[in-house]
Length: 444
Image 1 (cartoon, rainbow, N blue to C red):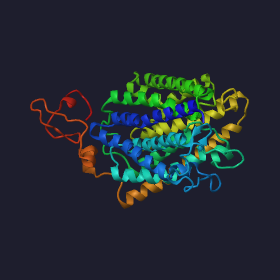
Image 2 (image 1 turned 60 degrees about the vertical axis):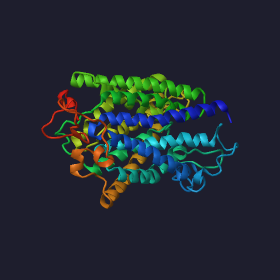
Image 3 (image 1 turned 90 degrees about the vertical axis):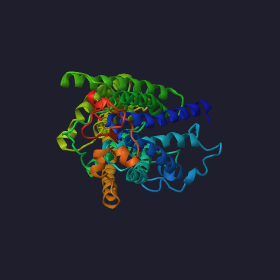
Image 4 (image 1 turned 60 degrees about the horizontal axis):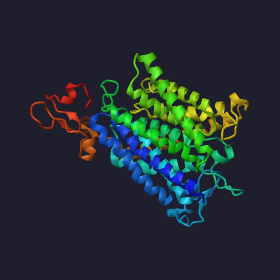
């Protein structure tokens, strides 16, 4: 055991854990005032539920010895994390439980990411049921495919990491493509929000969005650099590449906004940050810093253009999970096939560095396999829940506000100019009244 590596991984795990509350702020600020608590609760609910499932059996399904074809780890091998508390139980140079904790927070935020696609209209109980089922039959197996590695001569790992030899350093496929495809499927299952494309559905609190984006960027250094599993050169390279790609993506998104709309927005800056983080996640160990800049700026441009496609295809992806995470994850994963250089820690050359298309086709197979698996199974889970216990809230509850109807709470207590009495029920304005927020043009 190396104490420096252990300290770095535990610190990184804490950084990644912070990303889920950061995501709650990011998503919470993007919805209307009457939905902010429900949006944040979906992230916190995922944190609680997946944290428990990971300890019980999720880690074993993802990182137990393979039980066939690189598709699934043995779910009973580390049931309840048995056998992992001894001092001689190590993953490389860190205690096994440090690795368990680090991977747990990846599972948590992957599930939480999906919630942004179905904002304003998903019942909380069915969402929690979906989260548990989806993590069990989608995320845990896919994590095995992508993250579980071979030790010595004993094959224990998944098919993407070992047989296909596709590169996904920190989760472009297992996290972002996986969550993006699931978000697309759920948005189809639940249908459009009432008044979509007719009523204004602007973010109600942009400072909250920017704070959430800042916390995501901060925590993402643990996400990417922590995946080196040590305090070493690989961690340093991925740290710098994460910084560069994210900064470049924010500029790319803002440039598109300026050219298309005539102004750059704070929401665009925050969204560009997340797009860059998503795109560099799989590639951060495979490219040099200049390559990271190129991947980042193109991610900002592509995702800024992609978020408008939901209107063309009529899919109400509420907070652009598909446009940012699916598109950004696909771009970052495929970009390895173009920009990878053997001078980087991953040690392979992409098309632009003389490696031909060998790595590109591997990246494509891994990316689209995860996309298809997640999309199809999410459709099945989503439709099953919808047809049995019901997934979507009632129309009148959606109008009144999901915060009040699902949680009996409101995020804000708006009052009239004259009285001080509440004029909101779950964020919905009562007829014939006008709030300070409404007078200022804030979308309640």
